[in-house]
Length: 313
View 1: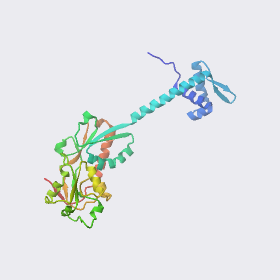
View 2: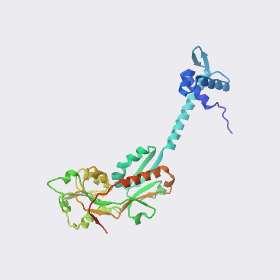
View 3: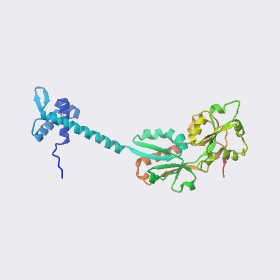
View 4: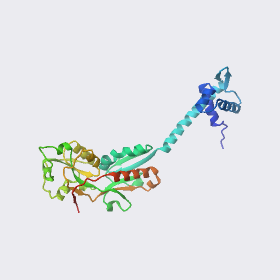
């Protein structure tokens, strides 16, 4: 078994400070000790090595040759210990949390709110994986999934965050266009409709479903624009490029800020909701549970616009 014949760390710290300052008094002030305490530490260190470390002159200190060699070694050792301790502390304090969800939910709802969580939990490294494909949480090392699906599709173990209603939205400038008024749904024929590309999870993002629910299947818009990502389509609506199908509560903040407006009262109540699914390891991670509590609070604070709802059976 290897044994290191070394003096106590406190003596080495006192020596480093005294050698750097060439003053027991200044070293004592730096270490929050008395001058006599530093002097005793140095004396014990000299007794341990059996040679003097300082030449004590009149109102001055000078390192001996042995003291200079030791000072260089102690400085390097303490510096390395400081760096390693800092890295270990950061590793202990840093917590990684991985969330998978749809690009639309991430871009429109989650990311704009995220600063309130990271501000309260700066030690948590939140990583968002935005994709429409379902992944295996335990296999892929993901803590949480927020999925847009039916209850049957996600299973009984999923926790419902909130439901969703769907209705047309556009920029205030477009809604105020006197040449193309948006007073009733039939007026959509004068406008560009912003479409999402069809996918298995987003069938209700289709204008066909909404128009059919209002018995307007034959409506032909002035033009159409297609998008593969929901947040891209909302950006186009914000820029005034056309009318999109808004999804509440994803866009509630934009409605509240009057960046988007709903020109009509008719909405579709979606059979799909947003569900939270935890990995097997999530219950053992305090940072994940803190994020879940934050998600619940944010979900409960959302509002759904009051409107006449047309249900799809």
